[in-house]
Length: 203
Ligand code: GRF
Image 1 (cartoon, rainbow, N blue to C red):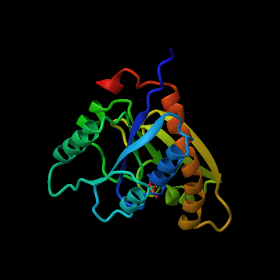
Image 2: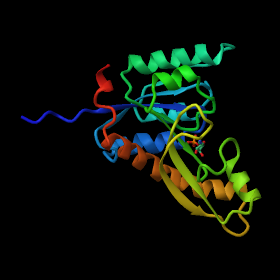
Image 3: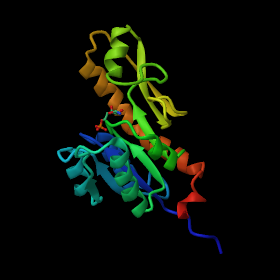
């Protein structure tokens, strides 16, 4: 008899609006990320608009605020919450805190991020403004593995977006965001299909 395919459990970290989180949840629920379910959404901000959107979709959402603790202590609490729920893969979706080395080490190769530029161009804050200021004709978005560098881990997938005459940060950001919502689920599906996770899934 063939073994049933494992269902991979995703954990999503947010700090705000959560539109990429919604794209991931909806894609998983529609079966467009095969063998995957979103197990939990964790926000470091109690006021993150994404929290209600997760709840509306029947996904457990948890707030883990920093509350004056060090990055290491805060991250440890998040790690416990993820491990308690047997999360296989972590997707950062507008999560605005840099992760501790301990977190990255603890989930090496299991943390993805989406960034609104064609990395390695324009890492860090305000990448859409950086692209406009440089007079780029094209920008886009990148899904990459998270390592100790700022937006510098191995690239998984990218989408190119044109910069149009008269673009503002808002219009360019909106055009890129539309592509982010397609790219992130596709990239997660690609990572899971490569099945880097079968061993550690039970550990
Ligand atoms: C997105 O542009 C994402 O690429 C960046 O932060 C933004 C988050 O937006 N990392 P949302 O919270 O997913 O709507």
